[in-house]
Image 1 (cartoon, rainbow, N blue to C red):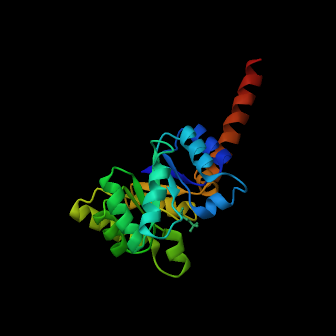
Image 2 (image 1 turned 90 degrees about the vertical axis):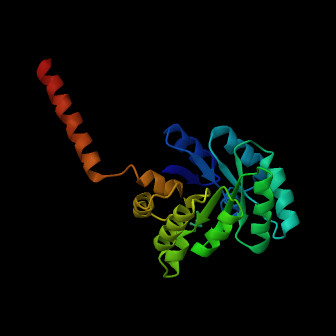
Image 3 (image 1 turned 60 degrees about the vertical axis):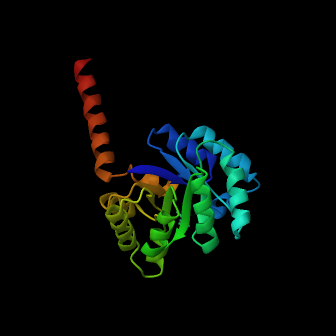
Length: 218
Ligand code: G3P
């Protein structure tokens, strides 16, 4: 499973990249807006310089022509830009056009298996079902993810599935077990993946025993 970071924050991206486990980054308009007065395209370029893997940058146009034009501009920022396009009729039409031109796309705001089928048919590089937001409204996000993975397998769709809107470490374990291709994880959840009380306890014990051993030697 590849790990993407779901953020537009440079410090978080640099830190996660330094751990050697980062395969890509996803941003969205909300995440960019949290960064204050940054220029969007400059920020995407900065992220692409840190991360070798796919970096998702989202269009904000809602019509076909606007989305295609924005996507072409964004895709020129760096080779690893993936253009995020919302799951609408115009969005799917734009993905069909862009995929024929070799522009990498990530269909976002996906909440059902049927939407994911349309994204795959349009030739999307990635599809992003939002697990947490489905759970938030009392649906089962993991069920939707499992259906998408199964349907893609049955038909041999090439589109890769990004489990998005991940809220906690348990989501990460569950999406990994389902065989998702990618999990895009917020920084605070990614940091939690390191944690286990027995690791901390064990490390304290190892260091204490080592210190006592050194004292005995001297
Ligand atoms: O980037 C898309 C997705 O991961 C958003 O997550 O937490 O806003 O539902 P969230």
